[in-house]
Length: 515
Image 1 (cartoon, rainbow, N blue to C red):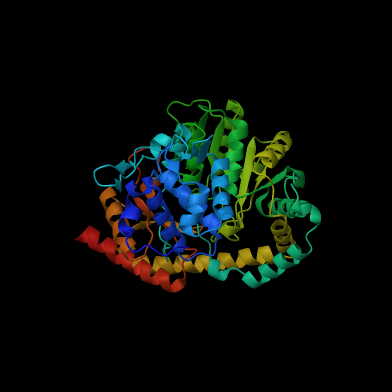
Image 2 (cartoon, rainbow, N blue to C red):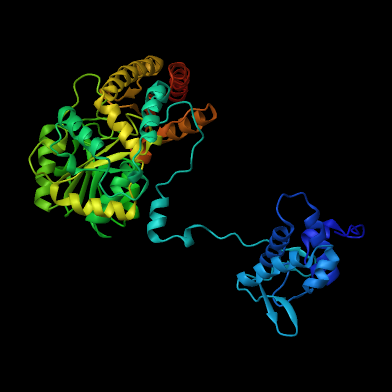
């Protein structure tokens, strides 16, 4: 390539368009661009430079370009190199030819007046707000999508003890099933999940949760959230009513809002969701509930409330969505039976997940469906989401059948009980001065109840600078104002950090209420 660039102003080439209107200026600018170090072929680099300048408006619509012969001479390139770049731009519609006149920049709709004629500086494109670009469903969903937080070391809710997961044992199982994976598993599947996993789950759920099911009623999905979305798609229409707990789980709230459902909050007290307390009972299509360990309050739904809920579902011809997200972790008593198994042929869809008992990155959950829903759900899931991770499912099935799963649950139950005790010990000075904590008979978090919304806001803000995540309880309410408090996840926080963060919180609360 020619090296006569000495008179060219690099700043003008990078910022303005006037110089590119002339053949000599265009050749000089391209020569500079092609001089930059790159492993790409010269024709590809030439193509990208011209395309970027056309899209940015530096080469204006209708502008005539030098002939390929002239440009090849100016750049010191072979003509075929320039022809290859021009042919690609012509094929994509960025350039056009006029018989006997030459090659021109095409008149493209995205080319706006981006150059300030007085300064030769490209005018900034106006920043468009995100909200007008979204559908009403998208906007409703975004309201429940909080900004991603930094990876705090304490007290993020819902995170299991990843430091205690049996990585080596799990990886050995996973490698074996990946190596022995049938060729058929590489193709599309519509079985509802690996049969051996559904069989293992059916046995486990019948023994540990009193769930009434056959393997064929289990549908493996990519996490509980996907299960919620499948339920909403198949069983509801926009505008249908859903009853859900107040306070309640963000993930379910987001799914229902995005589907355009009318959400009716049902108060939670010491016995769980109280459907009989609704001032104006409507006609729900879905009733969402976490009866074994209400999220986030931590209460267990009483038998009387469970029976009343099932009766209400029958009366309204509604489906109950039972989210049993962490029932394995009970400390004062054995796990309570699932709502699904209380009566035969109930209108309950049981939703389970491995994110809490194994690890979130596994992205596996399952639905236990009433017989009448099995076939349509299986077909819709195969169409909308496809099935996959069959090697992971097979490894998980063996993990369960060999007893590793039950042993892991027992170890985690002991670990979480100990970590909860450490958190209570760290918060003891504040509790002695009036801080109220939830009973913590089950689960992976505690709730600290606060007396003032301002205290909640101040503690959350101050904790962030200490690398501590305090989830505001008021944010779990659909109606305002919600009860102020803090949701303190302890399961995924190592012991030393529980002590440090817990002592900080105790002191911060004492300073706040006593200062």
